[in-house]
Image (cartoon, rainbow, N blue to C red; front, side, top):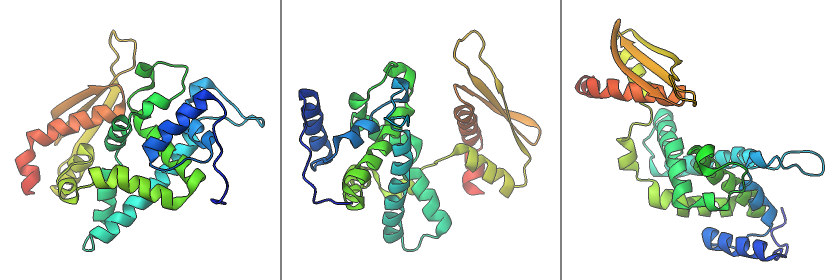
Length: 245
């Protein structure tokens, strides 16, 4: 990549506003605005380029996810010299969890840049984390790895990464319950089924049994959320046993 190229000045008032908003957000001058426009384009617009390839943030999200993971992994490797592979993997998962990424996107108010044909209520919470990752991907294409590294350090590591706090945070209640059951030789079962009822939006319920006894139930708009909800209830039911096992 040639980073000595001249900055492409915005040609329209809309592009000029976007340019200066980005500059304030990134703390550096963006070069190719189209990378960033793509990072904030929702698939609902059904935009394509001259060759028919879709123009939206999803491929940039994939790229940004990989770069974000590598920067966090490097930081944890240096800051936790005694941590083994399992520890480092778990800590990285906590930092880049969907919950954290959504919070990052919300704190930066990235949704203000998004171009979409659907309302904000319809796109769901995960769009905040998705476009944060897409933004990282756009930075990489525009200015390279070093700029990504600095942006992630300023926006993620410095304000959010507290290793001691993260060590005590549970990233997956389902994983914790399964690990505890396997460790203590308990038989467990996660039973899921559609439970929409009178609501138009699809819902799922998950029932957890341990050693044949129904312990908890969770209900939400996705199977994964329902599992976490039910598993969290199991955790608080057996918290002392789990903590001391």
